[in-house]
Amino acid sequence: MTNIEIIDKTKEYVKNKLEDEGSGHDWWHILRVYNNALDIAEKEGNCDIFIIELAALLHDIADWKFNDGNLDKGSEIAGIFLADLNVDEKIIEHVSDIIKNISFKGANVKNTITTKEGMIVQDADRLDAIGAMGIGRAFAYGGFMKREMYNPDVSHEIHNTFEEYKNKSGSTINHFYEKLLLLKDKMNTKTGKEKAEKRHEFMRSFLDEFYSEWNGEL
Ligand code: ADP
Ligand code: NI
Image (cartoon, rainbow, N blue to C red; front, side, top):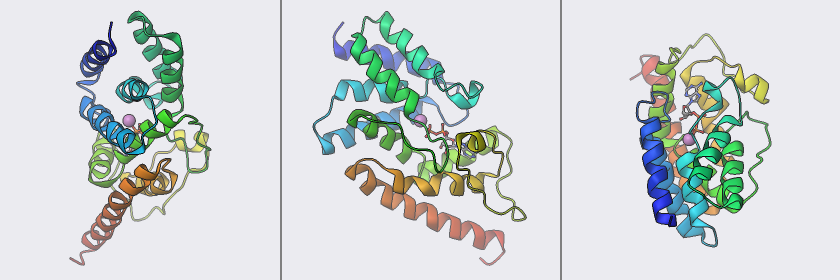
């Protein structure tokens, strides 16, 4: 099978699997991450596009949040899928490693992504968690989990460890403080950092507007 055929098969597989997903990991999220990862890769240069494509497409195939905190589930499923397509073992290992290490696990948890390909896919995934997309996805996720939008009686909480982050249950607005506003300074690549700036500012203005409206000032 050619690389193009492998990518086409992977797109078809992921699309079918995530079509009805309601927590913000739907096929459209995957497609946005895929397109943004390719754009970053082109600007950064010097990286393996095939690895980036596979990792972007398969990165949310099984999320730890919906698999009892199991961080290995996604990479296992992706590994089995790619082995069925006879993809080279070294490539499977690299893609699985990216999937295993891509997600945010708390404010002070050290990033374990090591390769340039991983850094690019992680940046693309993080860009989709901030800006207008990030705001939309956060409220969609909050609704899916039946969380309240905001609670002015509870002060903002930041969760430093994975244990704390995993067990959190705050409002959607709190999610901006525990994760979304922190992402700008955690971007890996120069291109990712540049892209994050505008999205970050947009979230800041959104929050200003949100509080003004909440308080009846507008
Ligand atoms: P990603 O796929 O970008 O790694 P996650 O798997 O952490 O992100 O979550 C999927 C989407 O849901 C993201 O946009 C994320 O910010 C959002 N999300 C995750 N946890 C919460 C939460 N507690 N409240 C609101 N949104 C959340
Ligand atoms: Ni994602």
